[in-house]
Length: 299
Image 1 (spheres, one colour):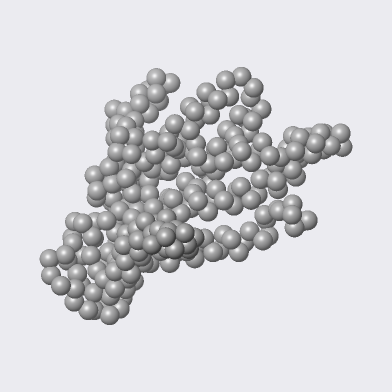
Image 2 (cartoon, rainbow, N blue to C red):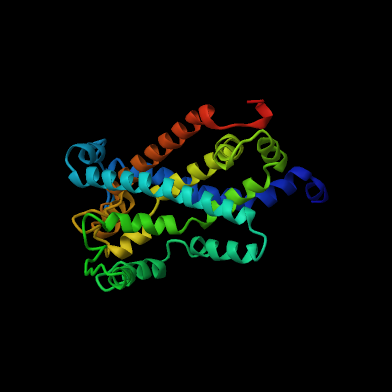
């Protein structure tokens, strides 16, 4: 026993065992199980029945809702991610020049991201963009009477979700702010001496020096956008309306799994999402060789 107690390898195994067991039981096993279920007909009540590739064939050949959810999701991602990053970078640059109460401002801007896509925030957003919400009250106040339910209007419903995502830019802002703090001021001073204005300094110094941070935020926010669920579920009451205009892929997956109890089909949907997100992440990293600047490489 003393020999085992003094063995450093045994000590390491003991300390890593909780993580390893947790990973095997709560991550690897569910992932492999979902891969198996994606080839079966499984409704939780009966034993899985093997179908082969029927779920995947149904997804791409017979289920029109899948195509609609793809369209809505990609529109959401392409609309929310750039706007979120632009607002985050803009506010970070403003806070980077502020000297008074900067800690208070950081906390205020970060708070929406801290509470995240919670049910309370989604309900608040539902009230703000309702037919008698804050948006219509403001428009009436400035002389533009409106009684439109922005959430109930098919042409604007998805954009209310994009606006909610953009409003929660605090996490990206904090990361951008940390990156801005690490850019040497000597670069800006040298550029000013050479006659570069603020716009040229931004495009020739700030953006290149921040490009690794932009890559990190872009990857993180793209994955997060594909996983968005709570706002769409609460605002559309789980239906993805109006006219399926807020039917995000994650919401459709949830409906198939927990409303229709088609666990096998939902597992197939989940694996397709995993492949799409993985492919887009790989594409982002492959393209980064053209626009990301690393000082250590001497680019």
